[in-house]
Image 1 (cartoon, rainbow, N blue to C red):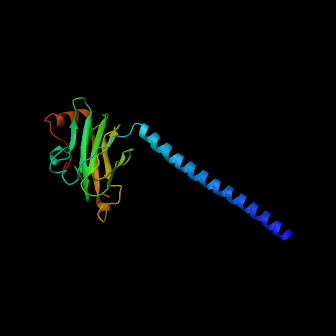
Image 2: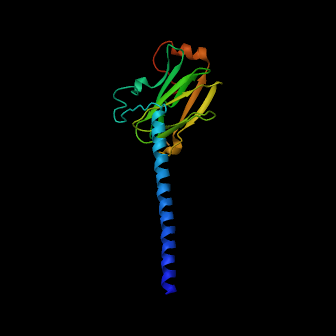
Length: 188
Ligand code: CUA
């Protein structure tokens, strides 16, 4: 009858090991759920970047991104706001003009698919997602021309989607801004 006893002992050992692994699996799941919950709550309590939306279907009809409002504007604070849109396969304006040593807020969105704005030689790099406004602060410490390629693949014309940023002297910019309106360096 020793065989039967051995079998019973074996079963008991197997059952114990099985329970141990089952407990471990439940603990792992519990830890993962806990982490997900913590991160979710934690992020909800952190200051979030504002989410601003813009309907890509009506960008050209009304609101902040109508064509006449695109380009650079000198605010009364002395800061500059640049508004731009990306579309297959260009940026509007294709040449952005800004003054040197000035806080600049770039506000941009996409009229169709996901594009990206990257200004070479700087840390400016943001995605343009249709439906959302991307805002990025920037400041240039030297004048000159900076290339601005689209850095998100946006279909077959992606390689040819380039813009330019022209950083000019502050006084020069202020003079150009005197007449009001929106500045760009398209065709210059
Ligand atoms: Cu637009 Cu790539």
